[in-house]
Image (cartoon, rainbow, N blue to C red; front, side, top):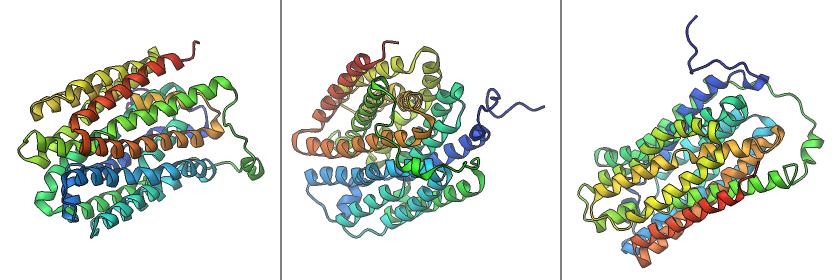
Length: 409
């Protein structure tokens, strides 16, 4: 008999776990391609903002943050809805919706004629999208608990791989085919994900449920104070993590201009991809480590290390110093989201897991909205170096808060 695709065969405890390995492959592929399409604009976003008529350098930095964060603003409001509908009607349907919606929205972004159209289309992308977050919910709820940390780590590696490849492609492709054609190609790639999701992803038939009970499901969604504290702590950490990451990336191109970096879009893509590369390398390993030593320990340690690594990034004198520091920071960040998802998943009942993980996604989106807005404002008006210092203080504070919020058991 041939070896199973993954390291060990797991006998599913429930019917919905039967196809977890196949679903994981589809979700990793889909998350990778959609994240590539969503992140490839980062190296040339300030240049696209200038192309759309914004000329003042401070305004370019600020509008870049607004345009980048707009997607996550609309996604923050819709993520709990998609999570709840996924619990009720099936998570495959949500992934089909997300992939088709993102394919349409990304293609339309290439048709923007002014900065307001760009912002509105980015809002539309967040409203219609959410493939990676939907894939996280599907994997978290359909994977045997004994392998959930590893499986979420593999999925996170796919997401981080997309974050790695996206900026690199975005640094190279626009000079070859043009900025607008880059968006059209991104839409085509996501459409391939749409087709793969329809024909390859398998979900067990959902049992009929009592709609009256569904509508009357009480809030809060957890049983007691202990679970409430755990979930709220992880929601805050997820928000702060995304805030810290997204406050930096939209201003990197402008930061490199101040460092007199040659080959601006290529080097910006390289700097942005360095953190993603570190996360790809460490994500699955840290997820596996967390299954052994505890997810809370890994979260607190990674937050502290990443916070300390942000300080020297404020004082680099050339691009390669920033590349190395971003890579090391990515190594620390790689295990955070799988651990956060696992902690939340194991703290709530199965029937509301999708909904609560949807709230987790919303908290991440809130951070992804506030991060670019505040980073662009601080960087444009007070100096790029201060963005790194403020972000460092936030991550170190979260590390201390995680240690204090950890259940004693």
